[in-house]
View 1: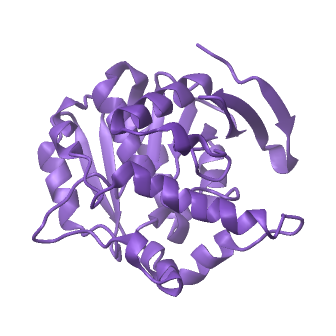
View 2 (view 1 turned 90 degrees about the horizontal axis):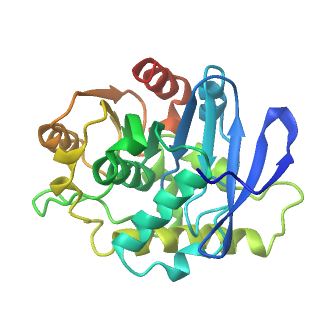
Length: 270
């Protein structure tokens, strides 16, 4: 197993590590104690540490690697031309972050990639938790295209409470005011590269390969992925699985309801 190369210690017990993925510096956050639990972020990535992760870190060693092109992932998406390129890059990222064989959770685009890891490399994932994953498409009930929206509409699509999204994306004190919006736009571009066109990666064909016990979480106010997709995913999963609907939560349910989502994941992966 490849271990992270460089480490700096941040405040509040948060450790930041830099690993190399395809020649690009990629951030990995680590916090907490207990068995390892990886988390792959959703649309927009994680420009800052969130309360949801703190709740997980109360009982687990939470490891959060950035996806290529997402905040902390530099321009790593620029060399990934196919879906296989993305899967191999995520596999390498999990290995170098020390997550091989650990529990894995993901949200939105990160949930789709977490599901792919469990399907293609079953030994990589012990237990799996997916929050409203991308990767499926139903022409009779298509997902909302987040890349075709006006900027002022996006917060209300991501979260039931748009102010949570706005706060996550707000420029923090001391950040470069020029670089910050570029990094946020790059995250949107990276996600679009994974899921072009129409967010359909044919993930449904591979769900039957997942053997890891799988928890599916869905916000009851998800305005991106219709909740009917949860039923399709459950029908496709051959291994043990369960579906929990999170009240007062949008597409990124972990932002709207950090405590409730964390409790479900901690209970499932115990």
